Length: 189
Ligand code: 5GP
Image (cartoon, rainbow, N blue to C red; front, side):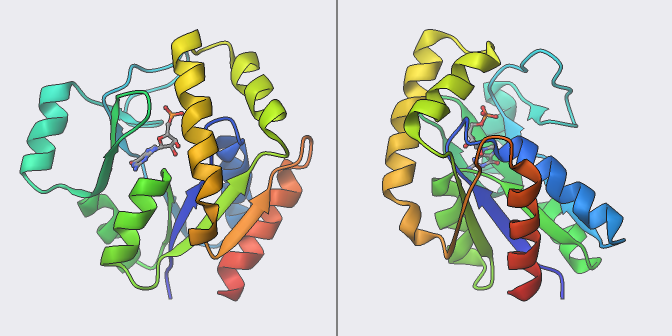
C-alpha cells in the first residue's frame, strides 16, 4: 500500500538534507517514492530550479490555481509567501503505488489530515534553537527579516509538534541516521 507521508519541521531543521537521504534509501531498496514539488510565490534561492525544487509562481498564478481548486492544501507562511501542494500530482503517484512525500509546514499537515485519514506525519526537530538559528544564518540566503520570521514560526511549530505521531531529531552530522529512522517509521506504519 502506498503511503502519503508528511514531513514537517522548522525552517533550518535540515528537512531538505534528510529528505534527500531518505530518497537515496528508497532508491537503494528499489522502493517506489515520489517527492511532491510544491508551488510557491517566494523567489528561488541561488541554485534552485523551477519545477525541481518548487514551481515558482507569480501571486496571480497562485491565486488562479487556488480558485481552480488545484491544491490539496495551501498556506501563507510566516514570511508572507504562499505555498501549496498540487492535488493532481499527489493523487497520480499514490494511485500508481508510490509513497508520496510532502515536505510542508504544520498548517499544511493539519489540512492534509482532514482529507486523508491515513496520512503519516513526521516532525523533524533541530537539536536546539541555537543550532537552528546558526543553520539559517550559515545558509547565507535569507535576509535578517526572513531569518527573524522563520525563527518566530519555528518556535510556534515546535510548540505544536505534539500533533505529529512521530518526532525525529536531526542531530548535527547524523543525517543518514535520521533518514533511516524515518524510513523505518514509514515501513512499520
Ligand atoms: P522554504 O521557503 O524554506 O523552502 O519553505 C518554508 C516553509 O514552507 C517550510 O516549512 C516548508 O516545509 C513549507 N512548505 C513548502 N512547501 C509547502 C507546501 O506545499 N505547503 C505548505 N503548507 N508548506 C510548504
